[in-house]
Image: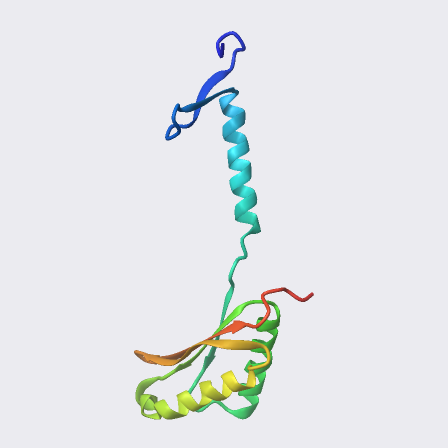
Length: 138
């Protein structure tokens, strides 16, 4: 029958009893499946991670400047990864770095919630903050 219609016989479900086959144009079928996959991919939300870097002795002015940037990132629906980078002997100020990150998290409380508390990894202490609402506001 497929040859008469100049189409292809395609097995749709091999696990069914009896197996399900359809007479269709195979190239068109593949094209439609690709199109569906593209649509699904386009609908998934892309997670953007913005990084903000501090030193253990970051000034108030610099801190406030970076805080405003972080607020904007969270309002745009991006995750924020804040980290304190310890250079050389500044690793002695671990507590200062942790206090700075906790203060940062507290100041951003109304814009996002903490995903991971400050954690020291090598010379970096990192903190992750997720946006509260994943809906973008423009």
